[in-house]
Length: 117
Length: 111
Image (tube, rainbow over all chains, first blue to last red; front, side):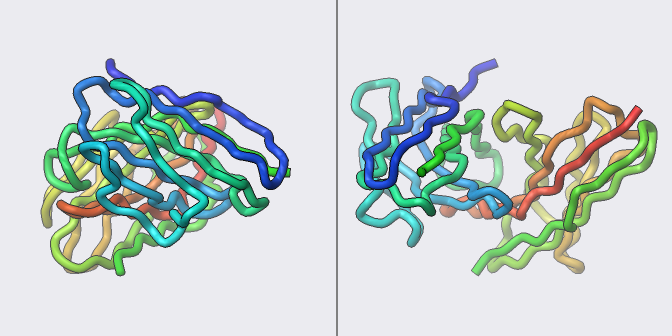
């Protein structure tokens, strides 16, 4: 069964450092997403991406964050200068169609745990 | 805005016990409702979904019915197994928007 793969599974970084989290979405999917879960809190939407553009972003997704699809397979989330409060599990997801209703289903990766010291 | 509230966990059950995890939602419009499951070390996997009122989603012995009148989507299973131990997330989604998740419920099933 096709799957979304994420690397690294766990990254530890110092506050102020740049971090890049990588995702390989399912090959025929066109829509890509990042969500995050701070320990003990809800899974929160960060950003959605389609046709090489951000289609929607939350208020969490400030200027410190960026996303990119640098080639035909990878989808990355960059945090430019990490803060302690960026420590979380980051989930990548992809889907064939737009939105999160009806026949459209998001497929999630296993997550990348980011620890900022 | 849209929101999802799940029952607080963790939930600990013996094998073959009956499981209910409550989920209620607030949404504008007509969302789809989902249960996702996360097994240890794995990603969020879609367990079941319902796209309109009175729909029943089912998979692997789990069921949930979309109740518009009570704005609920409670997850049930008649006889849990040790292998069902995982974190369960209720979520809602809209056609042009994002998934909104509940806080997750940790289920542990003992032999």
